[in-house]
Image 1 (cartoon, rainbow, N blue to C red):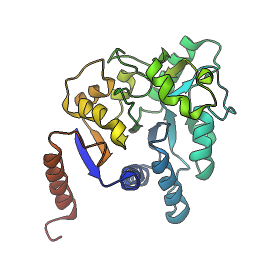
Image 2 (cartoon, rainbow, N blue to C red):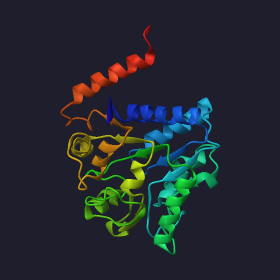
Image 3 (tube, helix red, strand yellow):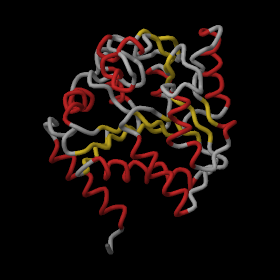
Length: 263
């Protein structure tokens, strides 16, 4: 796993945005996998800026979101569809028909999840998947103990996840206990994964993900098997990594290579 350590959340957002922007410019019809939550907000703000100030063109881009709460419609302010509209989609020139978020009010969840998987495959698969990470090391809503080969499905949220997400709701009782989520196996089929983490509260999860054993108890650790996984971290999130200095050396070598022999 490539590990990039930046000084703070703003730098994490800018670095992550450059990965996305380079892909969009190189392949205008690319398929992006997107995440919600507080961590990717900076990334989305930077993508909006790149669209506004530098003409980054999303007109042919297709997106698939990782997850959605069960029971919340697209106009509910706590739904992930609403989140994506407010923080990204309504501020760039993406075709709304090309933006896909699981339907939290589907009548047949099993059929809907199967259809979501088919849609991803029909679009040629996900080129770059943006990921946050839970404090217990979960990705999407693949809670500890989830199968590392799992597909898009209905998932019951742990009490820890409900508590973590309660800050977005008026009351703890309002936090949904069920969600539709892409599976770990679905995520691992993406051509590239971009994991973002900021803050000391994510340091333990990052250490377990990057340097710990691969285990279903830390579903993000499955990314160690991925052929192109990149973690973009701030200093606090990277603070518990034992090989932190080595990662810095590797990244410095990578940047010198990219700049060429005469840089």
